[in-house]
Length: 404
Image 1 (spheres, rainbow, N blue to C red):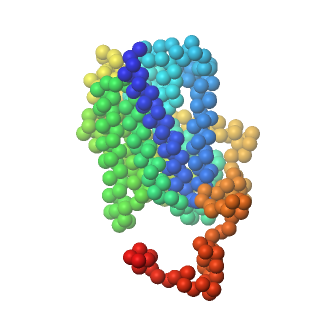
Image 2 (image 1 turned 180 degrees about the horizontal axis):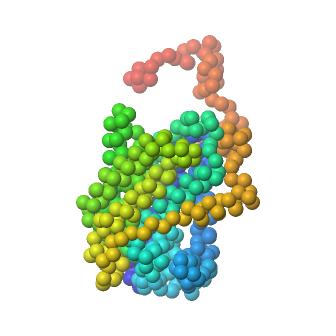
Image 3 (image 1 turned 180 degrees about the vertical axis):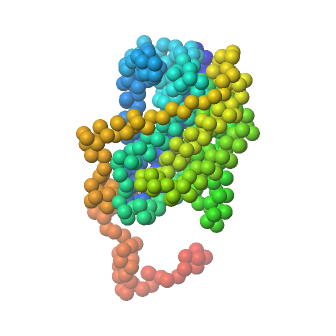
């Protein structure tokens, strides 16, 4: 076992975990309308926990265990110490480290994986994570149905600063996502990290400039979308392209998904029909597809050989894998068993109806909501009427008070 590689792999895995907890919790909690803040954040927390249980229960060994069919392994638990403390398939660290890192779902970086054998170049999971999640999210939105009419008309972020903070955690956490893909503290890992951040920065600035050119104002939502498209696009290529190629990919990932979201989304009937709240189709499916295509065009054979640890990698071709039909079937079965969509009353009220909680509230010691500051005639700080003590409720400006 290489202790340095093992330490980096555990660190990289933890950085990836921080992307979800608390990264996505904060990002999605701030991005939605106030009445859905708890619901969106809670789903991110629940998904992390539930997925980890499934991964340990059967998912890991289905992906990396004994072969069942050409693209599917035999399901088996990954909880026994004799299995977890054994050497992983590349022999540098225990299997427990791989189980934790591969919790991210990176499948085709395994040299014996069925996608790798088909010639797919996917450095850190651009296909199996981002492209598939974009298609899955869009398919789920189709089956669940749209939000209420009122929410579709106006859905402002409830906390832009929190949204940007969550996006920052996702960005920094991507260091572990792509930097951990080589499973070693190697030169390829270093290249992957710098390419990741260069592409993300280029994509962010490109999206921002397009927003300014078209609307005249920089948009915080646009910054988040541009950042995510850059990170998604570079993921399959991070360690197998040169840095100039990462910049080029950032320019493309910051412009084409912008066009599909801001222009085509209003023109194509299917895109208008499906209520894609967070624009996942554009930021993940479109950007993930671009990343896969550009990887096939820009990947350097020498870097591919170093990453895959093979002497004769000269295949720059690309094969796109779609799970669209599978997602449709899965959601259809779920809809038969239990409803996927909330009732109209729940859609109108939001968190208070679904969870019995609200994101922002001032509570007294007995749990009663006093609805502070609603009556302008009452000074809630001193609990007195304005007419009774006019000197207490001053009309002096905040600036003057600060000077005093």
